[in-house]
Image 1 (cartoon, one colour):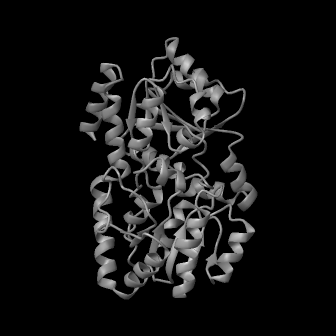
Image 2: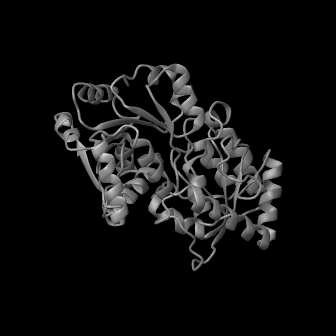
Image 3: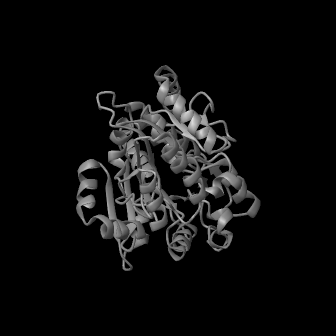
Length: 376
């Protein structure tokens, strides 16, 4: 089958976690013998910011780390009708330009032979409702929402005819334990500051406990304001800026523990949706402590796969315990890794996607997919 993904960016993961997931999904699709191509706009905000921050080096590095991924950049004169005519499945990310989202739906309605899906991996459905409500999804066969709470929001609002939950996951071909790597630090947190959606949480669950325990701590991510950088320096936390996702597994391996600090909209309005870093960290076999978060869908085994700290004081206690008790840390890391490998890999998500597609695709395409899978 031929998959076409309209992405905000596949090349750049600068403040753009969805690139992590789509890279893994596309690699899994191609591994199974299908064709997967990504399109991204010439004015991609993430890619522009990556180049402004790091130069063009990361663009070449992307090609080196992901040589099997096919991606093209489109401009205003691109022939989208011709592009989708060659595809069996077209999946459109929610950061795609609204006019193009509508155009692709119209192409589908006027006789396009492809299956058309809309993919939402953000909290705008609750934090910027008008933005999503204005999207014309009338020509889309179904919506993929990256959590059950988001799926329910779409159904309640009447956005889209059919809505399916499709969580993110870890690309285990990239994210895996690296026991041979020497530990250089104690705590690492990889996350972006991001629009004050978790600014106080970063201070109370990361900066203050690290300062209190005098940890050898590292923070990687972007969009940290000067006030945040001063707070990190005052706590003697090393700030390293942007880190390419391909380098994250080694960064995890160099440290003894990490944490999950969810953005406020996910805690308050979309419970059950973790950041993709939870899947990736557990897949690397590093112990994880989370700020308050409700695993409403039972994705993991809280207390076994990772710890949850109710406040900064408990975060400090749990970090101290994990660092002082290697057996406890090892057991937790093994449990989290087991859960990811059993339920939350990009292979699992491709299986789920193919099951969803079976209800919408022409019967001949379904038969062809099954045949290809058996042959592989």
